[in-house]
Image (cartoon, rainbow, N blue to C red; front, side, top):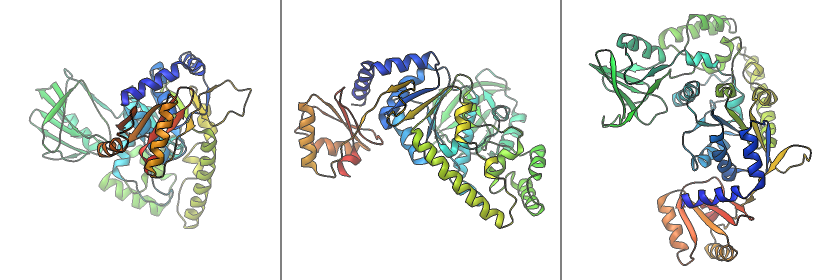
Length: 441
């Protein structure tokens, strides 16, 4: 069913003159580009088809974290190697550290981008506007391993703890490594599988992924990229730079924590302060990457609400006597992000700018049935009689079987197990996608 759905959308795009013009403009790098009317899975299908036209990675910016999660889910239906770059998920200036998994996911994605791996990254506006270490800082702290390479085990034993890894007899959770004889096991953050490096003397013979629970090897890998568990490693130079921005009392607490653990609570707030020119996520894409801004109208509304929240939290923290950076040291304006992204695309709602060079690729909203199965059946019969291709998406195999049973007496309805954020209609192409939530409410 999924393949039929993809083929139907590809044919619908192929018949659209605006789509053909958009593909040409994208391939010819006539950025910036503006697309009007496309959203949700329909926009995801377009971007999945446009991504191969670029030599670099793609960054997709959404108004909220929930939107980022939904869009990552939608575009994963059409292509692989999709990552959601998380925001910290904590209230700014509260001194509460994010979960370790968030540090790991962010560090993994940044390492993949600087390593030149082509991928699609989806992130909320908050995550994209936040300042990051320069790409060179990440690149300098990466270990690349390939079969045939020399492996200095003495150096590895020193480097991995600096990266934040703990040495154990047997890896079982992310952030651990084990070195036994001529086998090096590493469990990177953000990965479901651990990595096993087998070497003879000082030469790597093979690299495999393996299940950390059963310890059984599975897939041979042509390389492995090892990186710190966090996007910044504190050294003496960075610590001295940090001291310029904090009070004496906080300095003592932070120094004590860094000496014992190599990290401190709420440290992510201070990352941008240790660099003269902190970077941002779009810069990690390089010259060939493309940044896509989804729902421009909502993005500017989200930015305004975010900055108001940050200013209020900053004023409250300053009132408590804390030494903290101002919001403008932590995030850049959306207009600046648009400016630094040389290759960028804006997705808007309805086109109100008749002078803009734009591409109209709108879809209509899906249908809602509120659990009324009789109404659902009547609508499906009507749609099919009018030549529509009907695709119903369930979030699990069991729900797919349930829905298929409910519409078993209607020929032509395609039901499959794959989640989409929302249904949509393409009247000219006679295609409708219906999500499980739209059926049952």
